[in-house]
Amino acid sequence: MASNSLLSKIATNDGHGENLAYFDGWKAYDGNPFHATQNPDGVIQMGLAENPLSLDVIEEWIKKNPKASICTPEGVAEFKNVANFQDYHGFPHFRKAIANFMSKARGGRVKFDPDRVVMAGGATGANETVMFCLADPGDAFLVPSPYYPAFYRDLGWRTGVKIVPVDCDSSNNFQVTRAALEAAYEKARNNNINIKGLIITNPSNPLGTTVDRDTLTSLVKFINDKNIHLVCDEIYAGTVFSCPKFTCVTEVLQDVKNCNRDLIHIVYSLSKDMGVPGLRIGIVYSYNDTVVNCARKMSSFGLVSSQTQHMLSAMLLDDEFVSNFLETSSKRLARRHRFFTTGLEEVGINCLKGNAGLFCWMDLRKLLKDQTFEAEMVLWRMIINKVKLNVSPGSSFRCVEPGWFRVCFANMDEHTVEVALKRIRAFVGLEGDKKSNNADHQLFVNSPRKNRRQEGLRLSFPATRRYEEVMSPRMISPHSPMPRSPLLRAS
Ligand SMILES: Cc1ncc(COP(=O)(O)O)c(C=O)c1O
Image (cartoon, rainbow, N blue to C red; front, side, top):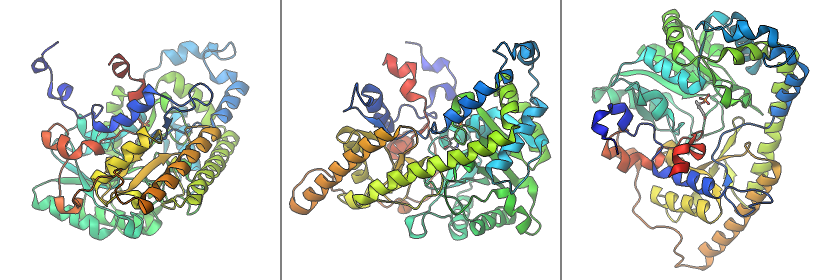
């Protein structure tokens, strides 16, 4: 075995997060995946935020437009030009097509300038590129919790940027407040942490909700007052399926007096809105010219292939297709969301009222033996091993309240959703009976309450032991390549 001392710190630290406890759920799925006929008792994957519900609409367009592909007799004449292209500005018509799609995915209420569209390898690459442009190693970004667990990797693994959580809770449906931001900001400053900005996901992963206009305006005011950056990861902008409608950060800029637009940056991707994460289409859209310039140069490390650019240019400049796709996708997501949440309500399980995303934020607090994260982990392991559903515990998103779980509902067919609901019904019925009838049932741990707020402000130090002890269960990558990883298969 090669000695790690010969390798870099990045190569040998755990910043990627693949080895952590959370992946037990993914391993359970990978070792025993559900199949309706071949493995009906297998584990159902509800930890994957994928959106294949409207891929048929894209396939139809591809069949009708063979010229858009350079690998068809109709399109091969463009092969040489396209395959030979490597300019990091991207094809002008690709940038125009992306700007057009971004606008349509936000209801046409805002316009985007193609000259500000910068390519990246998915939102993963886009988030990292933005961090490289805005912060130095050791600097930090405020992140309202619960938040996307792979932010540790994307924002910090290679850049050295740290995360400072801003605690949000169910008392106001997990909306971030100015008071919470001020508290986190002041505490960080008192600890000599240099806060360079605030990053939000809107719509939120894992909450499946959108940030309302007033809150968004207050966030813009906050960063403007502090003279720090605001990064809005809007990767789920086109997944909004019911009211209230989505408000993009661009819409509120004119509401804030003397807003310094140089501080505003959007991260986008087609991975969720179009359900094509494999194509790795990530976008940095910044109102800051220097950031656009620098990010464009950096994009050499994560360009979108010219073949993909070529095809998508034709597809996304087809207004009829784009409108039809977005409408169909939104209707199908709404239907699926309703089907799943109604099924849960029938057995007394509520979710945070959601209007976007590919998941629900499910409230299982009443199934915990006591309100601790230890009890949450016990319940989570039962759901994986007994109910055979791979869902994601709230602690992995650094939620401050135990008992919340993120459950993805779009990455499977309707029959699989029905099987999942049936299993949940059986489980909840059983557990309800046990809790009311059986005083000594051993299903849940009984450990002292740990209040995360009292742990105080903590930066993420993914490589340290402390991180492993305290943070490991939170470190989930909902879109990790783990299940298909050759490394995992080998092990
Ligand atoms: C909030 C958020 N940002 C970024 C990403 C990464 O997306 P991509 O596949 O485009 O890299 C995800 C994926 O789950 C996400 O949920």
